[in-house]
Each structure stands twice: as C-alpha cells, then as structure tokens.
Image (tube, rainbow, N blue to C red; front, side):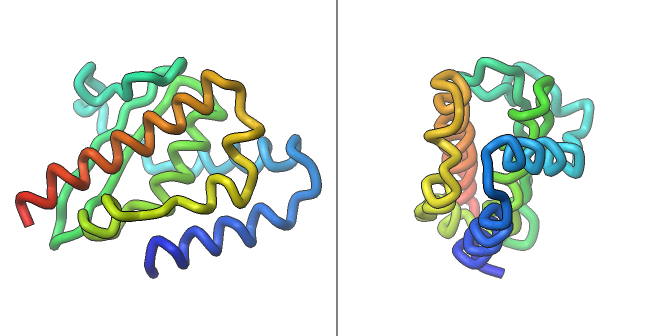
Length: 139
C-alpha cells in the first residue's frame, strides 16, 4: 500500500467522527496500538526535538524500506506519532522524503492541536523525513 493510499484510509477513518472529542479518543486508541520502541532505543539521540512531550523515534532500513518505532510519555502525542508511523512506515526512503502529507490538513489535525502539539507534529514529520533522507544515501 502506498503512502497516499494509507493517507486516504486515515481520512476515511476520521470522517466517521462528527466532533473532535471523538477524534481525540480515536487518536488515543491508536497510540495504545503503537508497536513500542525497544527500550535500548529510548535514548536522548532518539528524542524528537521540538516536542513538548518526550517522543522517541527510531528508524530501521530493511529490504529497501524504512520501518519506524516510537513511544511517548503523553497519550495524545503517542497517538499522533502512531498515525505518522502508520502512514510513513514500510515505504522507501525516497517515498517518505518526497511525501506530501495531505491527510494532516484533511482531517484537521493541525488546526485542532494546541500550538505546542502542532509544533511537535511538525518536528515529528521533519525527523521522519530526515531519517529517510539519511537512508537514501545507503540504498
């Protein structure tokens, strides 16, 4: 499944909810399903800078595709990183680096987050793309 197909899936999923409290609950439940980062990866260099909460993100390149794992100490943030991983993981470095993440605006995520969480989301995207760019040189 392509990044755009996964984004369309997320948009469709979020369209089932009428208000933002339901969407927040869904984001929190997504965080509970997040495959957790290995404890050894919970180190300072894997912390995403710019997030108010502590968010660890690790990336691994397997068979030409990037696989992300993460964890956070905040439930909403954990759900947001889970959503990002769902859309971007298991894609090639080039696909991730070039991805237009239109689902963020389509589901209204940025506009319904506090300014600090919105900055954190931008930092998550930036970090995931940086991993992809770094892996592009290794493919």
